[in-house]
Image (cartoon, one colour):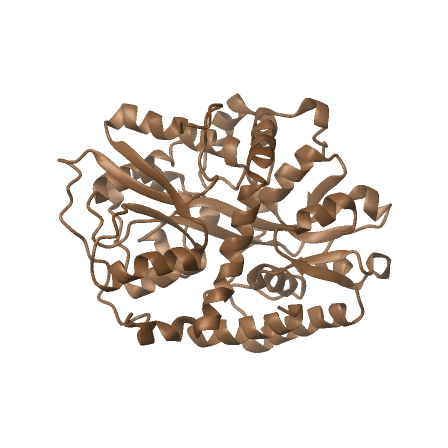
Length: 415
C-alpha cells in the first residue's frame, strides 16, 4: 500500500495534524477514555448498582418517553457531542456542516462539546432521565455499550423512519443491526471505530507480521508487542484469531482467550497494555507491532512513512459511537432531520475528511474523493467490501458478565 509521505500530505491529513498540534491529539485521548470508561462503572458495582442509586435496572422500564414535540414552533436543536468530533473551519470558530444544515432548514443548532467520558456523562444525565425529566439535549452521542444500556433502561426515544430517509437508505450494512439495537430502532451511527494491527516497518526489520498469533508467538518480537487496555478490543481480536466469533462466544471461550494472552504476558512477549499512548511507543519503535485503533493509524501514517497497518485474515473488531434522542427531548423531529442530514453523502464526506474515523454512510466515497482522493481510497475511513466483510462486533454483556470479564482482564493487565 502506498505510504503517505510527509511532503505530500492530503487536506484531511493536514487537518488531522493541525488538530494534533493544537489539542495534543484530543481525539486520541477521547478514544482511550470512551473505551476505558466501560470498566469504570465496575468500581461502583457495575450495572447492578443502578437500582441502589434509585435507577431502574435494565429491562424494568416502559420504553422511551416522548415530550410535546416543539420542532414546528421552535426552530432549534440541542446537540451534545465529544470534543474534536465535528468539522471546523480554519478559524476554529465555525462548524461548516452544521451551518449548512441551518442555512437549508432554518433550524439553529446549539452544539456543545460536553462529553468527555461515557460514565461521566451518564452520571450527568441520569438524574433527569431517571426522574422522567428533560435533559435539555435533543441529540447525544454515546459509545455502543452505553447506548445499549440506555436503550434497555428505556431512556431514549424510538426514531421515526419517516424523518430518516437518507439514514435508512445509506447506513452501511455492517452497522445495520447490532444486538443491542436490532434494526436501529433507537440509534444511528455517528462514526465507526476499527481495531487493527499497526506496525513500524523500521522496527520490524523484515520480521513478517500477518496475525495476532504472530504478535503473541513470534520470539523475534518478544518485548516489542502492545495490546490495548480496552477488553473488548484485545480479547475480541484474540477470539477471532482463535476462530471464535466475538458476537457469539461462551465464558469458556473468553477464559481461553485470557489464558492465551496471559501466556504471552508471562513470557515477556507483550511489552504492555496501553490506552492511546501506544502511539508514541509505535512511532519510536518500542513497539514493533501492536493492536491499534484505525483512526489513530490514519494520523500516525501522516506523520511517519514507517507506520502502516494490516487486517488479519481472521478479521478485526468494530465498535461505534451513536446518535440517540433522550427521553423528553423537546425537538425530536428537528433532531431526526439533523441525524438524517449527516447521512447525505456530501455532508458525510465533509465530516469524514476532517475527523478520519470510519464513515458509516454508503455512497460517500465519490463525494470524499472531491475533497481528498487519498482519504476516499483509505480503507480505514471508507472500508471496501472485503474489509467490511471482515468486521466483527463484541456481543452485549449481562451485568454479571461485564463485572466478571472486566475483573479477569484487569488481573491480566495489572490494572
